[in-house]
Image (tube, rainbow, N blue to C red; front, side, top):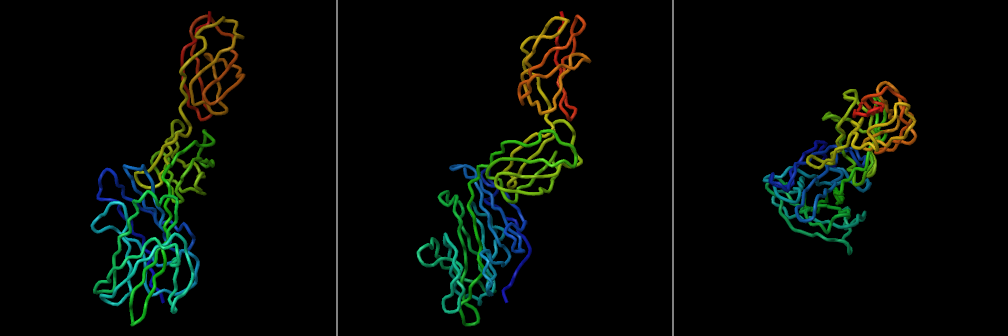
Length: 339
């Protein structure tokens, strides 16, 4: 029977320098019942990117229902090494020789009753010898820092000797993803506790975290371009900070229930009889925003996220507060003078 380990181990990509980040995970991304891992890196030459390592703890990533004698899993760095992960494999004979093989496509064949999960025909890009220690374990360093691998998926399998026969491990599927996290917005802009909010963007990690005002919120769904979550009870009502974190150190902020800003007025005065039009420039003006002159509401002709066109109501001669209110109760105020 294959050995399995359901425990998740975080690991460090680098020795804690400015171009490295500590990364953790643990969600079951591929649905095989075992925790998966995100490995995050900051590459000062090529920019930010990360990889996804699936099926840690001795589970097959490719769906084959075969038994394996060796247990292959990722582990912590000891000592830390820049640009890669350490792979542990257990279950071989003490001091036996081993082979690490990786390919750019999976396979499901056998050779002399040995299950082969990597493509050994013409798609093999790594074949490296190593030795097991006195306990039948080995630690193999896999370099993940080559930017040419971005956008590809690699498949890793280990082989060794035990009980006078050749042993094969389970496989690891490693997806090299272009970092490129770019958030385009959140809808709706105004939300109350219990409402569903949607974040859109690109290169969102399948294990991305959402934090609202610094508190983690469990997403209801995640894809590479969209995250849905339920607005929590800790909303402030104005200027709520929403953060999407692909991995520790790799995150971008958004604002929910944004505080409006008045930056320009097409005119700062008008006749007390009202009826003139006024353009308010600024942002962010979500749908449902209202404008008042003193205590009198203005008629909104057109409202976009950054511009509001209103008809000025009648008023008493003198200065009044011109106020923009968002549906969540946030407001911004400037001065307008009736003549």
